[in-house]
Amino acid sequence: MAGTFKTEAVVLRSIRYGEADRVLHLYSADHGRVGAVAKGARRMRSRLGGRLEPMARVNLVLHRGRGELCTVTAADTIHAHPALRERRASLERAVQACEAVLRLLDSAEPNPAAYNLLCNQLGLLDSHARAAGRAQALAFRAKLLLAAGFSPELASCVSCGEREELTGFSPAAGGVVCGSCEAGSFPLGAEAHEFLVRALANPLSKAPEAPDRALSQADRALAETLEHHAHVRLPRVAA
Ligand SMILES: [Zn+2]
Image 1 (cartoon, rainbow, N blue to C red):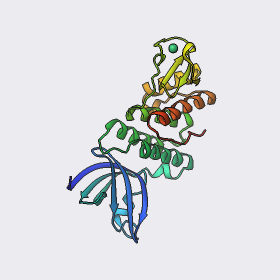
Image 2: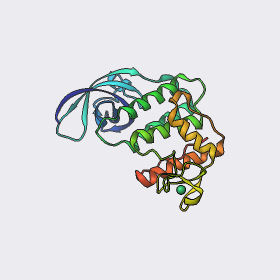
Image 3: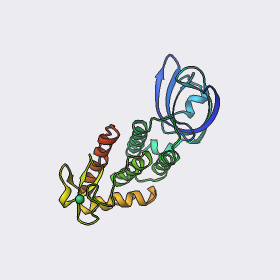
Image 4: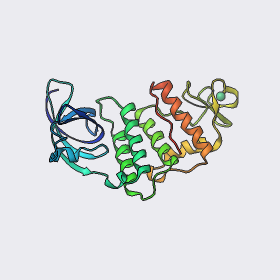
């Protein structure tokens, strides 16, 4: 569809292009993933360029011509997230969040749950003086899987429906399994299971904590679910 449209978006990635331009990977509120060129964005005094840094949340006016990429005709900052850029640990978590959205959500369909989740995560990383820990980063990832439609089954054994004695996780089957159905699964302890359930139930700002061993199991469950069902490989969430 050609023409000019407005949308709110987060800049996921910004790549140098030509002499002074940038190609932007955007995740937008109304049009899902959008690719756009910001002309002249790398010139010294470009007002546009300063507003289109990665992880910035912006209001955009975009023009879609015949090519694959839109052109940015105007940009206004909603939130630049300046504080998170000054703390390396927060910056790494923010880059990770943007990368996960980039890899997992490539459709032009709007996904308000995913968009709001990303905005929340960047806002939290910006406003907290202490860097978000591994548990918080994993809670974001669990919620992102849910928003993208790849959330693992956690309530009962994916194989037989048993609700007690859930001891393993089967990435191929996409969820928890009981002791009798554990073929092809790896161990998922009670703490890891509870962490995932609570991460999905709680708002991002109240992400649960769990011991590191449980977080490693939860991380593996999320990563391997994505590999099997979305064919996407994301780096593990480091401590
Ligand atoms: Zn079972």
